[in-house]
Image (cartoon, rainbow over all chains, first blue to last red; front, side, top):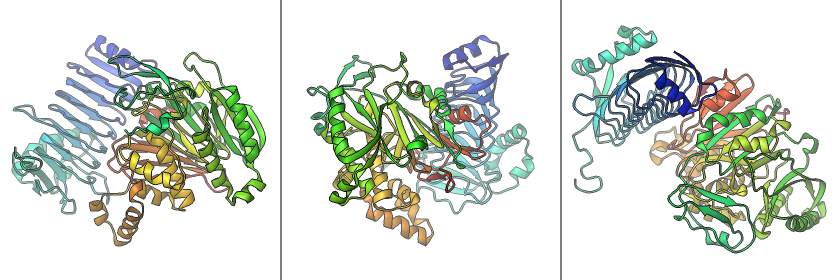
Length: 239
Length: 398
C-alpha cells in the first residue's frame, strides 16, 4: 500500500500505517516522528526523511529507510528490524532490548546507549561506517558492531567509547590500539569463537547493502567487554 | 536554571499556570508590580529547534524558505517563542545601525526617541510591518530606526562606534522600563515573537526581505516563561545567536561577563552566549575557531591527546577564559556580518546537521528542515561536539 506522507502529521501517518495492511510504502516522508512506534507484523519502506524516534518500542515490524534517519531510532525497541540506507542520527538504539538495526553508513553520538539483554532477547546493531563519541555508553547487553568501511584515515569511533559499559559486547573492525577505553572494560583481538557470534550479522549487513562478506570479514576485529558483572562496584558506594 | 531577583524589579508579568500542566502563558507587560513566578513554580520541559542557511556567493534569499524550514520541526517548539535573523536585508541603509525595539506603550516610545535623538542621527524611523494573524497575539509596539551615532557624542565619550552602540543598547534594556532593543546591527535584523516560528515568519512578512543568510529558532523555554524579548535570536550589534539547549554554566558565565559592562536582563541562558561571543570576538579579537575552543573547550584528557601546538593553544584558551566555558547542552548558530558559525557543546547533547547544495550551506536541528529548504541537499553530516562549522560569504559579496 502506497502512503503519501506529504500532508500528514505523525498521528495521521501512524494511523494510516495501522489501517493499510501488512506491507506499507511511505513516500514524501519529512520529519514525522514515532513512525511505526510499537508496531509488529508490518513491513514498512520509507522514502524521504523520517523524524525522530523512528520505530520506538518496535515490536517485530521491519522498517527500511532509503535515506538517512534522524535521532533516537529504535528507542527501546523490543523486536523486529530497522534498516537504514544512509547515516543515522544520535542515540540510535537507545535502551533497545531486542531486534536488529543495520546502518549502511555512519552513526552519530551515543549509538547503542544503554542497550540491554535478557535471556534470548539479545539486540544487535551493525554500523557500516563510523560511530560518534560515547558509542555503547552504559551498554548493559546486546552486540554492537562497527565496520568502519570506507572510513579512510578517520578513527572508526569517536571519543569515550564504552563509558559506563557493564554488559554485552562491542566489536570494532580493525586493530584499535590507538583508541583509549575506560579502565572497566577489556579490549582484545576477537577469537574465532567470538567472531562466530557476529558472522551472521556481518553477512546480513553485506546482503542488505551489497558488500562482499568475505572481504569485510577478512580483517582483524577488536572485541570489547566489561571486566566483570559489576565493574563499578566502588564507584559511588559499595553495592 | 538561575533566577535573578534583580530582574524582577524592572519587569513584571502576568500569566496563567494551569495546575499540573507543563504550560505557562505570558502576557507582555513591562510595567507594574512584580508577579513573576519563581523557578520551581513553573515547569516547562525542554526542546527547541534551530535552522540556518547561507549563500557563500552572497546571493539573496527571501525569508520564506527559512520560515518553511521550521514547519517539519513544529513539535520541537511549544508556541512560546520563534524568531529569525536576516543578514544583508537592509542594503539601502547598510551604513546605519538598524535598531529594532519593542515598546509597551506610546509614551515609552516617545521617551525613548528623545533619548535616541540625543545620541544618534536617525535617518529613518518606522513601525516594523506585520500581518495580523490569529496565531500571533498580544504584540507590543514594534519599531525600527536606522541610525548613525552623533560624532560629537562619540568624541566626547571617547568610544568607538560599536562600543557606543552596544552601551546604548545595554542602557535602554536595563534602565528604560517598557523598552527593549532586540536588534542593533548594520544591514541585518532580528524578528521575533511569542508564537510558533512558522507563524512568526508570516507575522513579520519575511517573504518581503532578501538576505544572504538567515537563522531561525523555535522556542521551548526551559527556565523562563516565554516573552517577546526572550525569544531567539539574541543579538548585539551584528552578532546573533539561536540556541537549542539549556546551559548549566549560565550564572558562572553571567558573573564573568557582567564585569565587562554586559547586563543579562532576561535570565535566559542564550543571552549570555551572545555577550560572550561579542566579548571574545569584538573586544578580545579572538578568531571564531578560538572562541569556539573557549566556550566548547575540549576535556583535558582530549587536549592531552592532541599535537603539541594544539595542546598549547587549547591549554592557553582554557586557562585564560575558564569562566567562559559553557557547559550543558547546546547547539547554536552564531550569525555575524558575512557569515555563520554552528557549534555543539563538547558532549554533543543536542542534534545538529549540516548540508550543502551549490553555493548554499544549510544547518538545522533535523535533516527534515534542510530537505524543506533544499530537497536535493548533499553532503549531509553531523559535526562532532565542539567542532565549529564556519561559513563565510566570499569577500566583497555582502
